[in-house]
View 1 (cartoon, one colour):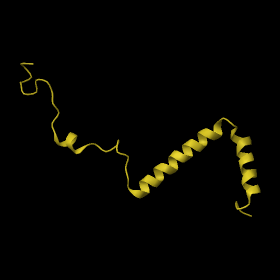
View 2: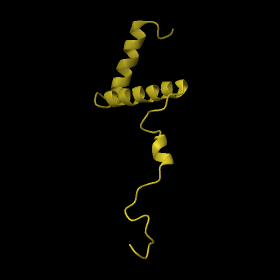
View 3: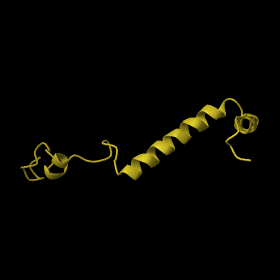
View 4: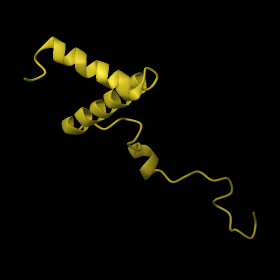
Length: 74
């Protein structure tokens, strides 16, 4: 009485198709896959490289044109 029977899986997919429609199912699958991928990455402790700031950017002061002059001379 579980999902080990292929007929049960087929019936579940048919019900999902009737409820959500053919256009929404790929979107739902894509968002579910992205969520699972993010969950696995969080369990492994790996953060995406784009979200972590570089150490050089944090320690080096920002180069601003005329930063060495007083504000009245700019």
